[in-house]
Image (cartoon, rainbow, N blue to C red):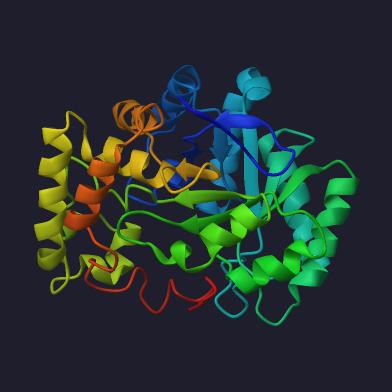
Length: 327
């Protein structure tokens, strides 16, 4: 497993991390014991950066993770987030009071006194990022967090935030079917010596051997709210996805392995953040952190999945509230 630095002065971690959103049913029913076994296996693969949030399962993901951290916390570089309320009338709250309450609650649920990397999960548009950075810097100075992260922000927000204090990481969706970070965030992170933590590098599971069938997705599966999976767009997307799967197999890899390797090829500051509770899937993902693609392979992948190939936006109206738009 390649090692990459998590921010300016941060620790060296595996280039592939573990996301925990689907530990609590974001992609269908989840078995806690399966998730715990997956976490243990991940450490043995070199996956040592675990990412969660206070709103994943309304705190249940952090509670589950605390069971693992009791015995393995010294081997895990931990990240969590705040800023989303799940209140439809006030979905985002970046006030100092709410952020502090969220942090203290996360620390209690996780059973720790310190979170290595703490993200602003969504930027409340009416509140200046400079004010929010001051709040996060207080948490850092108090020793409750080690470094500051920002999630789903525009490059301009990163510029303003970095002028106040160091930003160790920016988390954005980035994969072969969502390449918006190439319009400024990828470059901005490199400029400010911040890690770009690419979530959904397997593209909601579509860059894998088992292509999902939207009609068979269970209630609560987040993909039901994503236009790329609707009846009009999905059949068109399948054509290129099958071609990518064939190319991966021709090169002796699973599509997931190749997709992870592609994300990591985007720059030495990029960290891939797939979410899985399956040991077998995480083995494929982790393998992507052990290979380097040739220029010829990169060119062929670009031919099969060129920029902008996916039909439909990455989010529908509901999910698009919160991520900052740019370009």
